[in-house]
Length: 104
Image (cartoon, rainbow, N blue to C red; front, top):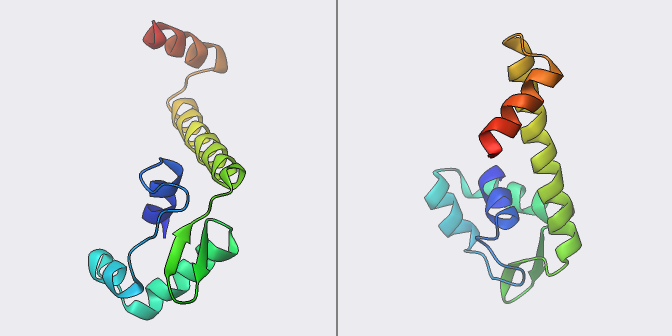
């Protein structure tokens, strides 16, 4: 599920794009089709995918949903980075200084 989410957020799967079938995805990820079905249903509940009965599943065309998920991912990555830096003994100021140095 995370890999599919990440592919949507990163733009690898475009809005409106049809995703592979449950069977194909379960083969690719090496999971049981029932497990993949549950994962895709959860992504539908989150608004990242939608189903059309005879056509399959598609990436949402609501870009605000994707942008919200993208922001959430970014915040999680930043928080993990900060936690790791703090665990190494860096202060906020030192982290900011390192970021500015690397940015240049």
